[in-house]
Image (cartoon, rainbow, N blue to C red; front, top):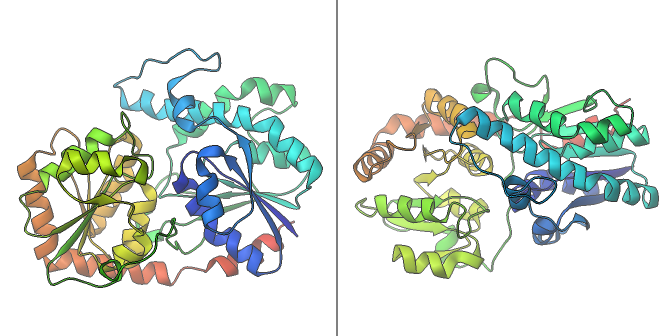
Length: 375
């Protein structure tokens, strides 16, 4: 079979689909990954064949409308969530014809799209092949889907479609215990396997030191003007903590962040380093949170977007994390919460319980067999 994976938005969206794409290749299937330019290095780094269908980064779609007019951001949480759908709808519109041209040259038997790659189900409908929607985090609010469909209305109507076509299979990588009680996908489960670009490993990356170790990150999209100040401030709030602090950020901003924080900053192979950590402190990003769940590491979540609050609350309610809302994240509050997570045994116990649940979820190889049999 030919599997066409469609993703994009940040390198994290490529890491999320890597295990299933790799499993499909290992099973003898042909695989291509279509995405935007900002994810090409992540796709190539995973050893997957990538095709660039757009040079426009998701950040541009977030900050500009279709005519290139800058957008004014809103402080309203509901409007912020809708704006995510608008942005990914614009990205889908930009993908649509390049994807169809790719499919004319290399016709897939199935299209697998990441959570917010709304061009994937439209392409599958045009080709008359199944579409699989592959979660890349702990869940997106319905408002995002609604806004994306509204944004894509011109493309959908031109194709005679009433809306974004339904998927034939949904894959959820979030452990069932921390999925939403309402509005959750009726999906097959798949084990989350952390993936990321790999530097040359040094011994300190895979061995524990004599001190408690805390990893801090704001995700793969950190850049000047985009979560940069958030990470600088977060690191500063942890300086009073008696622990070894590791700060992970893209290499493009590592030097500048190092100067701003006074700490060593670099691209950490999180799939390796997180196993050695006693605590993860971060922006509540889906990939980072799922990595902590997979490895049984307690987490301190400080959501930097409204959509990240509900999954953070569920993880905190499970007892494997604590959440501090923006505005409440004073240095004293952050240090106190981190200290509590490091010293209260129940957090580690609940985190390890969740890791056992993740380990029992079906592997990507098992899910490939389900995809093979879609009718």
